[in-house]
Image (cartoon, rainbow, N blue to C red; front, side, top):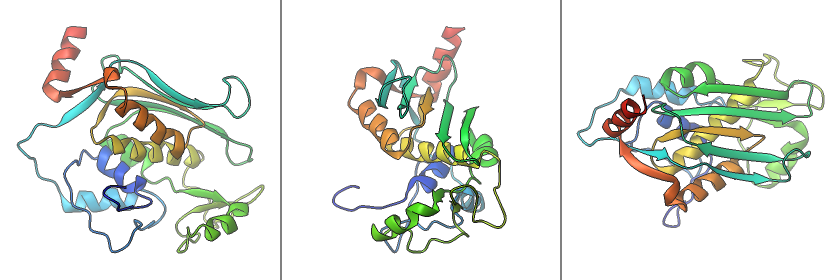
Length: 238
């Protein structure tokens, strides 16, 4: 939201823009919500590839994490604990992620991903993972004015012990892949590519955006640098 204008469901497009290295773009909408498409970021990645890109003269600037920060809910080691933390990247000139989810459902359980984010890893690992929800939640979502165009063509819908989608899952860990993709879109709200290591444990949109706000309010935890400065720092670290 900015200047009184609220745009909803931006995370899939923002994740695609972030991962593809696009930081100067006009997006034209005819409504207050981005289209869900197939429920993943893959259509946006394909559109960006088809559109092409242009190099600009201005040097890209990054947020390099200098001090660890964490936000959490609940008590560590107890049921219901959730957290997301970011720390210095230890020589990596980009963002690395360690993401864990856990749901009491036979198709999900505990799932984990650990990877370095770049255009190839995003396109191959994350972009095709679809959003998901539980059938029992659908009526509540509709009453909130959401998912008005929702269908099995744009989401994975879980019953209490199975799946409503006839074509099944795209990946055994599609749920964790999608949550990690959501997080990248939420972190894109910082407005700069991150240089740091992110560790998330059963987090979600609320914790992702809380970390964004905490980072912006803690200027001592990061500094703004160019790619050249990152390269010099990496050489010095060796």
